[in-house]
Image (cartoon, rainbow, N blue to C red; front, top):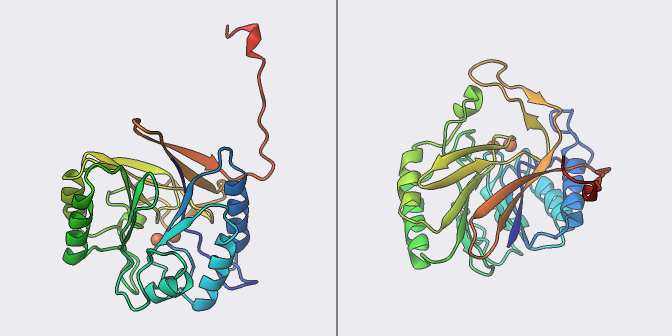
Length: 272
Ligand SMILES: [Fe+2]
Ligand SMILES: [Fe+2]
C-alpha cells in the first residue's frame, strides 16, 4: 500500500497570500496535480495538519475544494493553525470524521490495508501541542483492538526534539507519555507528523517518528538558536510511505516539480 502525505498546506482566503508572500493555495494545487501524476498512484492521501492559515470557514472551503481534486481517498488531521469545528464541518464527507461539536479530531480508519489512526495534538490558540490523558487512553484502547494490523499513527506536532530551537519551543508536551503507549504496540510502522515544514526522522517508542516537507513554504535548517523564524525557498515536497505486504515501511520524499524530467541511462554499456 502506498500512502502519500501532504502537510502544512496553510490555505488562505481566495486571492490572498500567506504572510503577504507565499501563494499557498496555488502550491497546494500544484501538490495535488503532482500526487495525481505519481506512478504508481498512491492508494490513500493524508494531510497532517495546518490545513489552513487562520481557521476560518472560508479557508476550509477553499482547502476542501483543492483537495477534492485528489484522485484517491484522503484523510485530514488538525494542526495548531486549525479549528476543530472548521475541519469537522468542511470534511464531514470523510466517513470516520468526528461529528461537528467533537472536542478533538481523533479517529481510526479501518478500510484499507494499513490502519490509519488520527490523533489531535492541537490546543486552541496555542502554537504547541498536547495530548490529554483521555486521548492517550483512547489510543491505547484503539491500538489494542487490532494488534496484528499494520498501523500508521498521524499527529501534527512531532514527539521529539528536532534541534531547531524556535520550533522545539512549541513542540508536543510530555512526549514520553505518547512514547510509552507507542512502545506497547509493535504494529505501528511510523508516527507521521507535520508542523516542522521539513523532513526529519527520529527513533521513537521502538518505531520511527518523522516530519514531512510542506506543500507551502519550508522552514530553514537552522540548528540551535541561530536564525529563528527563518524559512527558505527550498522546493516543496510530499512524502510517500510505501508498505509492501510482509515488508517494513519505507519512506520517500517526492519533490513537487511540474517540469520534472527523468533521464534513462543506457546501463547496457556496463557500470564501470
Ligand atoms: Fe505549519
Ligand atoms: Fe504547525
